[in-house]
Image (cartoon, helix red, strand yellow):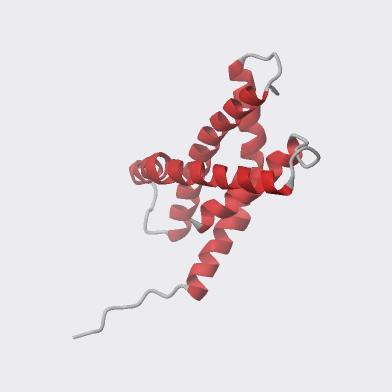
Length: 148
């Protein structure tokens, strides 16, 4: 949830800036939008993207014993899946708002996808992912069962 929350905050803020929404939306509207996007993103991550990404990672031929490879591969699969679905959400949202250009829908989708992947991937790999793993390692301790 923390990873999803961080990515939603960064990506929603990025898309607000990209689409000039800071001058249009009130802070309350922005918070409402972020909450709605968080709920959608979390549901997608838990129900569709996460399970598929885990299956894909375990099918790929690489050394799964190496933690770094596992993290990088799983993060890559998650980012691609989430950007794919959230770009569909963005396309639908833009269509409802009437802000789509007269481009073909596939061109609009790939434009949205490209703009999002160039920010989402490095943000996940270099900032949010490491920060969440650090927080979990420092502040969330897993209680070990007592030895008998």
